[in-house]
Image (tube, rainbow, N blue to C red; front, top):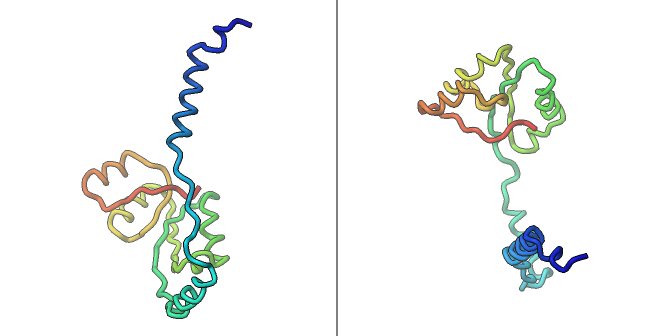
Length: 136
């Protein structure tokens, strides 16, 4: 094996990038300065002063007749939305074309589906629509 094989450009770039990533890594977290036994009474006081329950936030969610919307129904039946403080109403629609006007006018709060040119045009014209992520 030749000596020059160890120092070819790809090998050098690999070594330098590894060193760069190692140098840019965040520092290790420091050890806690307070005694855990001392912190427990303060945590207990915060739990006791917390309100017993919050008012549920009402959310209208669009569903279409496709199997990909099944997680909404499962979460509603299993009480996952209620655990998060959400009162979810599932609004059944039959066509994708019905969703955007209802969403832009505030008749529904949440929709999931394809990102389309119509949606981008609505946002561009000042429609109050926020894109986050799909139900994946």
